[in-house]
Length: 219
Image (tube, rainbow, N blue to C red):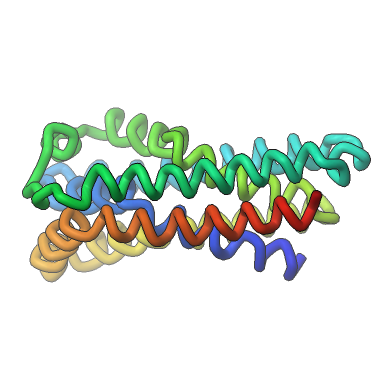
């Protein structure tokens, strides 16, 4: 199990540093409805992370051993690694010369969400293309490891907790100390808007190359 957790760490880091969930969380917490929407949003996001990665992990774990030890899984790892590298490069090229925006249409809508919309949006965040790629990488790391069902669930819980830290910590801190978090949330929002391109580039390139290397080693 320690080896599987080690393989999950860079993937969970990439998920945690994804700018879209982080930014939408901050915007939601700055809205006047945060007292009603923040906790359902967080729970839905955690459930989405666990379910998507869990479905892929248990699905791969159920495959015949000859498939998991063959070249198919290695090829999938290579493809995912290359796709993550491509995502990072494309995102950087699209944002490198762009002036940071103070807001956009999506963020304006997030700030008006009620409970139902917050839950639905939190679930949708887990089926973005980048989120699916990272969840698939996590599924490969866990589904191809020699883990018991209990160990697999434990690893999924660890992955969910680590991947959600940039969502769960702001939500918990804001609900616990709403008066003192307002200025910090504004600074977070401005920083994410200014640095999201660089962060996405570095993290996706690093994780993509790592997964690509693992795939080459499994061939």
